[in-house]
Image (cartoon, rainbow, N blue to C red; front, side, top):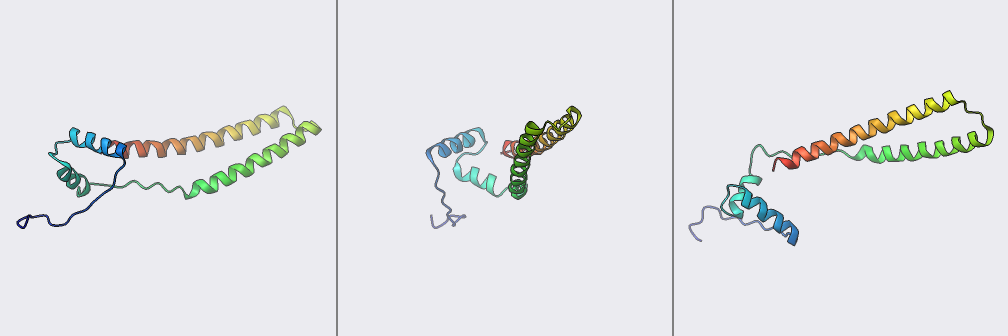
Length: 121
């Protein structure tokens, strides 16, 4: 050990399932052991980290809750007074549908980025 080239040790704690997953990845790689695999993965200069900013999602959820609240109030008023025409109702349905499509699109884009990122390793 005194002639060892690499003298610094790093430790990591894993659950049983994480260890199984890690051993599977090592077996699928061209690395001979954990140390070689860890160096290859951790010290790879092309290694990138995907960061998804979810701070806007809290604001989005808050706004969606407010919209839901407003819709409930509108529905109650319309049911009581019968003042909403079918064309008005159709415009509301279209607007809500467009909002849902935009949220789903953004969510699917983020999911795809995660799949691509984790699929590289």
